[in-house]
Length: 201
Image 1 (cartoon, helix red, strand yellow):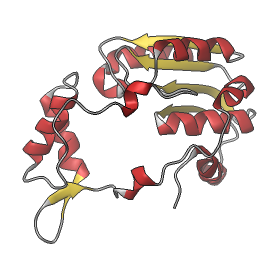
Image 2 (tube, one colour):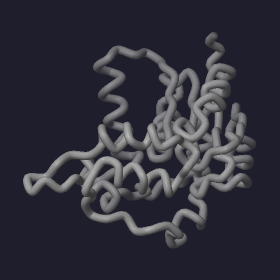
Image 3 (tube, helix red, strand yellow):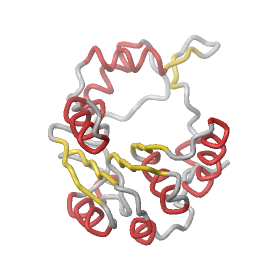
């Protein structure tokens, strides 16, 4: 019934215990990044390294600004229509990528209309969990990479820079030609940053 980092802490703990990970690298985008931050602050012995993608202790005021693009309809007539809508909102990934996203993320209702597979209540049930996020940041002892999209509407640059400074072992990298969905917008730059912190070839 609720989606926040406090609830997700139990989920992450349960998964890694079932899989048998004594320690692991945790990478999270957006809400997943906050879930990772919270988990790393509470279970530092389990997190070898943490990577947060375009999320921080504060959300940009731009995130709540009215959209300049067309409103999203409740249903879609075709995969192409949904793909074009996504592309209009963020042209960094190419249209063929959005066609793949739409083809794997839509389902047909009994009346034949196409809708997203996720339930609309996911957005309505999100909460902050009354967490002091700057205190969480200061409690993370794992080496942490903070990634931000150059044109992010979610994570302001000054917040990302402060976050990296307040992290005991933090580093900040800005991904060019990207908004919030870094791994979609500029996967090569994200991969390069991950290779550096994770030290794999």
